[in-house]
Amino acid sequence: MAQPTDFHVHLYFDPDEVDLARTVAGEVAQRFGAAVGHFHLRPVGPHPRGSVQLTVAPDRFGEVACWLPFHRRGLTVFAHPSTGDDRSDHVEHVIWFGPSEPLATEMFN
Image (cartoon, rainbow, N blue to C red; front, side, top):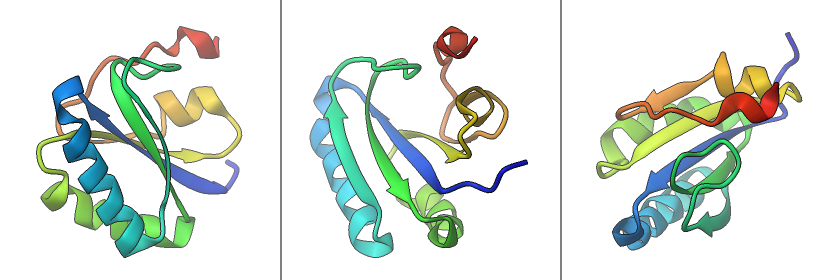
């Protein structure tokens, strides 16, 4: 299996939770040096609702994974490695913090 170039941490939010998602994303960026992507207010790609992608270096992901369960402020978080195999990254090599949600993975077939 290929080693990940980075990890993607997706914070899922509803429209009334955008400010909360911005706060959590900002904390992850400040504490762990994660790059914060665009805040999508609607489903994008395989993601079932609004989300923002945080890009985390492989050597920092363990720290992020230990921090998130206690600081996600009720947001659902979907995380996966970026190995170049999008289907496996989004279907097989996943971590959920909070309840899991169905992804639109047919785009990877």
